[in-house]
Amino acid sequence: MSPRMEISGVVLGAPDARSLAAFYERLLGWRRDQDEPDWVKLVPPGGGTGLSFQTEPGHVPPVWPHTPGDQRMTAHLDIRVDDLAEGCAHAAACGARLAGFQPQPDVRVHLDPAGHPFCLWTGPA
Image (cartoon, rainbow, N blue to C red; front, side, top):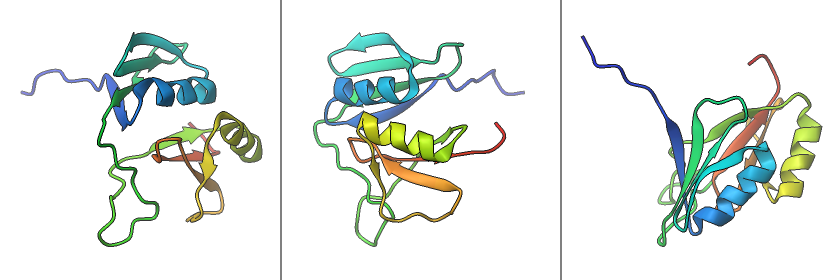
């Protein structure tokens, strides 16, 4: 029998934790639960798994899509939106960049200010 385990959060590294956290605060509308110089945790309004950011001075942004020899994306966030065009406009206004490569017509890959890819998509939760 295995012990009880629960994912309590996802952590993204960045050159500046507070700066990247501010981007996701604007994007998601979440609030700060923890705020230290090199660590910030955001939590959703209704509770649930949070999103944290840690400062990594040697942060190297992943390359999307990856090419041989480049830093690979090891994880990304999927963010469901009600309206894809509206979600993309909001993400851009918050500081995201639309990725040059888009693998699916119903998903839009964006890059956050630290270069992490995230996907906006519509559909059932």
